[in-house]
Length: 265
Length: 265
DNA sequence: CCTGTCCGTTTACGGCGTAAACGAGCGGGC
DNA sequence: GCCCGCTCGTTTACGCCGTAAACGGACAGG
Image (cartoon, rainbow over all chains, first blue to last red; front, side, top):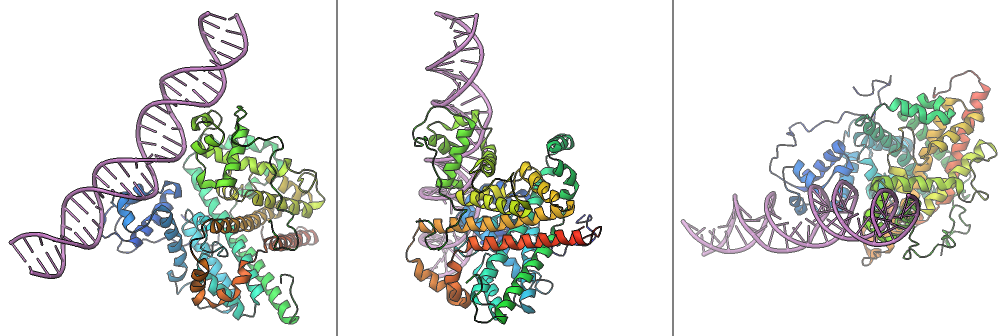
């Protein structure tokens, strides 16, 4: 029942698989540790939303009282930080031979494309967690969501500098790229969340209410079917390629007119 | 002490002025109504952050008990929705003769530029409120933050359609534009918040800690001074103009090869 | 003067994050 | 065998949260 409305499958939208030997979350193999807690928190947010996550309820989902968690996690805020770290970390270890392996790439464009799709896969796999990735205060002021780890930023800058970008151009590319990713992915998961939250509270005939609302807005009323369509994958691709073209132009300008300062220096 | 590091002033960064006859927030002119409450909430968030906003504390800032607020606001969530609405609404009534007046414009590019700078001015004036604008579930699934009002989306689509954009192109432009705005502005206010939160907890010699952290990351260490620089205004402008160029290309392609479907249809 | 209607206060309840005391189970030294 | 200390989940408790419900004073109209 996934993406049957699109004629082409979305490669970033992968089925979420349970661990092969993982029992139901009601059984508890009695071993409690930080990783199990963080994974339970991720599962809980995916299933019930961030607002529903409380220490008591998270403990209950692990068959344990709330205070037991505090032996492994300093507090709720640190728990959320750990959730963000753990989700972002799946960029590397998840499906390493298939689609996204950041370390091994063919050129900086390929790297940026793989990284973008990797982050998008994460966002779509955990739409309720992604706003946390976007909004949690970063470790350093120049760590820009959703690229939330020093390793990641380091590899980004290294890849571009190795490809001939100046330090200034690489940093400017980092900023443009993170803005692009954050905007697109946050809006995509927001839309998913909005659709879900609309489904679980039908609340009378929304059809009539919508039509009366749009009476004063002719352009909205006319384009409403278009606005409802989900072209996220295609638009993501187009914006990404546009950004890559822009960066390529910057790189070639710098190579042709060497020693000249660009407009960002 | 504002932006003395930049040689050019940021036009979206305006001084926040108190109301001329507004007394201190400790005095209470005894009239309580919804608008006063919403404004007090905005001031409170600007000053103390969203997490610190509590019904009890908000009431106290108005010289009143928490329960008094419930006569004018249904609950905390609706209060936050009201805050978002009120802040976004300042797009129209604020400084109408000076910089941003959406209704009266010279061409669609001018409209998009004014709208972008208007939203940026809002984001910079209320950096702690903007994440709320970005993350609150929208009224309809196709209302994309930060353009959070039907009026706004209607005027956006109307302006572009009047300028010759097809319905599909106007909707695609709306999506690309909102993604651009959200990404850039959210990252800009996040950076402001991170800097502020770093200032109020100096926490020992952060200098030594930072240097040890960056030992394993040569590219980060080398570009660290560049990463610390704030080029937000220039980058915002450049990305905006790039987006406008892209839209202009789409528009002219559609005009030249009329009746042809574009790649988004 | 009485009475109803605003409107802010008081009281109360369940849930939250979390500090602190508690106790069951258990493995190693004597 | 015994006991000690350590690990780790539980229990209890505190203050703050959002908010339902009862309350009371001020004030206007008969």
